[in-house]
Length: 351
Ligand SMILES: [Zn+2]
Image (cartoon, rainbow, N blue to C red; front, side, top):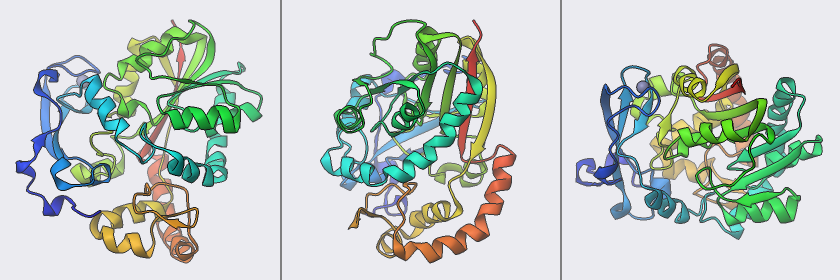
């Protein structure tokens, strides 16, 4: 599909979320000095026709720098959105499950460093992941001796985890899951908190279910990244309405501290140069690039393939090598300066 923002009269779009859920205060530091940044339309990936596009407002707290969508969605609005999505969310079905499984070896390879990092922070081996998708991360943990539990709102995710991988998984969300208190050594939120209507739910739940000195592990888009700074409103992580919260390490630590956590590790990462390049190019040249270098999954062309997906086709390989050679050293420097696109943060429960 191609009806990027250049072809849309943005002012003609309907607002995305109803106005009675406007936040007057920053949900991170509670201060009231909020600055309107810009309006942005629905990510075209999530709609099939122009008339379904809506417009969302992005604000920034002038005290702590937290960037967020405002007005906020109601629980029902958010559920309706995710249920309608077949990419990898609640509406996903058999085809999405096959694509996920097709990439499983690559995904598992990416998850191993995360497990090893957790093993540095705790000797405990009881792990819960909220938003566990198809269960591959927990599968990797399980094979290393961890006792794991997944919580996942999509039926396909629960089905894959439980039936194909043997990973115990509960159907639920951070808002409604029922868990025993003080029972886990680690709680993980990988690429989840940016989606939450009320991100503080995640920290309250963590504080309750972790044992004393338990660890919370988080990955999310880095609002302080060089990509966010250079891209401004074109930054690809401003993907609406899925991403509602844009944290930096600094303001994430404010909300962690308030909920009884102390930050014990922070690092940033960027996807390899080729994927970043592809992402950038696809923004400008989407229809052409989709045909030339993008999105083959399990041997089948798929225009809705997520750019950051780990799949690589034969056509891509030589282009990929050259671009990686040029761009990866630059990204390595950005990561060392904590300016990478993805933020990974670990915090220990201290009270
Ligand atoms: Zn704030």
